Image (cartoon, rainbow, N blue to C red; front, top):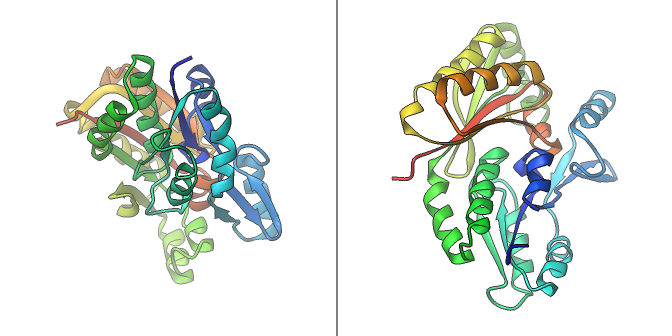
Length: 284
């Protein structure tokens, strides 16, 4: 057991085998349909989320863990003598970071450190894995935080949204935009910039064209990659993810190319068949 316990939240979208292998603590966000609240990945899965949206015709709300949730998760490890480093969902997207900081302040100074990933999904996961690797090699919390400050701006996060329906239901585009976009088969591409989801460009035409553009954007940056981990993260797009994984393994020479499933919180904002490629560039 390392002296440092690494925590993330359910939006990091790391595969279960990596979470178990490296003993990563996961704190779930909440998915709320009407009066019913579910813990992301604990009480509800992504397929179940889509079933409920189909039945109800509306999207759920999502909510951050409370400070009490964080305290309850952190306390046993503090009592065991471990220090905690929690890597959060972007503070630009959620109050998760702020609530974790409130919880951290309830413990003795220096025992709980909260780091803002300024990212989402496996854009967080990439930073978590850097932290885990460093902790297992004996780095201190302050050394890991310094590493993360250098890594964070080098994370590349880009997703293709397959349909405007979820952006429309979530109030992120107008009804007219949704109709026009559907008729023209426009697929927006989202990048994370300065911690925010930012529309980067739109691809008009078949889904395959949009995925090819996503792949080409990644391959254009091979020389900038750090060569460690590439994530292909998706919401119920297994075949496309497997295909991208194979190509990226052949073309990039990365140490590992991993497919991962988007959890309920990420999926509720982006929708079914969303797919992304995420990696880190070399630290300058």
